[in-house]
Picture (cartoon, protein in one colour):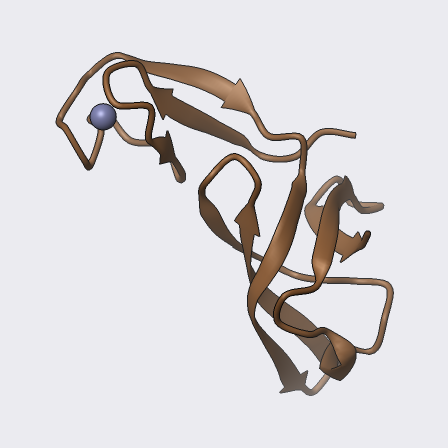
Length: 101
Ligand SMILES: [Zn+2]
């Protein structure tokens, strides 16, 4: 199982997501490409009520040290909890979503 691609600063080690040209911490240009293992913890969660139904939007802190906006699928959108351990997976349309781990 693999998660999102990100960058790692070769000078200070900061994890960078989304992609950048310079490290936002130290200004270094040498940024190494890396792929997250996809394991993270829910930082915040919202149930979005739309005409098509209710879906989840969540900010997830990946173990590698960056935060991304995504969704937690596979359970009721309102049942997602802050602090929940989640694992990234590709859905049927090849989009990355998280599931309770
Ligand atoms: Zn840096």
